[in-house]
Length: 345
Image 1 (cartoon, one colour):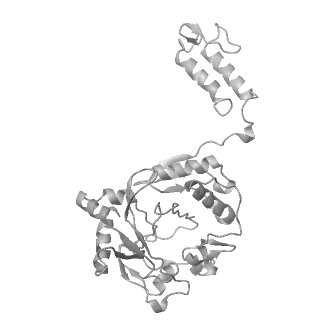
Image 2 (cartoon, one colour):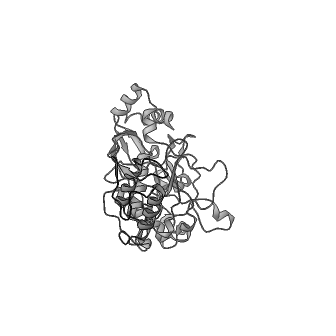
Image 3 (cartoon, one colour):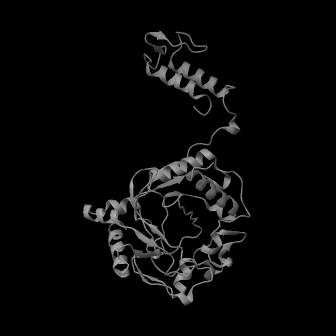
């Protein structure tokens, strides 16, 4: 009903019905008096008033035309540990700025994971997929979302991060095909054999880091993508561990990497522990790509999320150079970070 007529009219009807003297044979009254309703007199019962309301509201000239009315809201259900699943939203058909804002709100409220079910058509519309990702990132960064479909541009670091050009979606170097479908008659894909290796998204810099994954063909058991909440990682620690984590400053860099994606790191010698939380072997400097750069910077593992104001523990072990104060024992620093991450992962 609210979609057919103004919210004000709907609210009037709801308020009036709250004070009805009965459902049959009684007028809708407020404080002992018949509610002034267009075309309604004291002999009209509840159902007559309801019929007139529906007729008036659905034929009203006020409000948006049916073509401009908002589509029904999507359905949201919680995932087992954290995050939410969304159904009833067709990204490929186009979504409004209001829906972009709703999705970001869900992401913030539910610890950073939103799974939008049933988006199979997006694999045929890379421009729409890319535009959706950019609009959501713009909104998350506080910029005005853009409806333009950017088909030619790529994120500045896309080519370097995503490796060989044959694994890009043609024309879109910032959309990478990940998996092993190239072994089953499909186009080229990149397949990381490093095992568990935790990638980090979130608010660590001037703008949020986001990943957009489009599931095209599910892999076999054992190939799942795992997720961990930085909130839960911190909250799983004892008070003593939290105090230790709060005091840490780490130096992050590409010292032990190849200059390409993790799949390339593995091919050039990088190895992680079985749980993916500690670097075991880095890439030999002689095997680095020409695109390699050190990229050294300081980072605190513990931070306060700027929107939720909750404490987060998040760090990418593959980029840990050393813990400040433990420069002479890099291995011990790696073990310390692993110890702090294990309870919540």
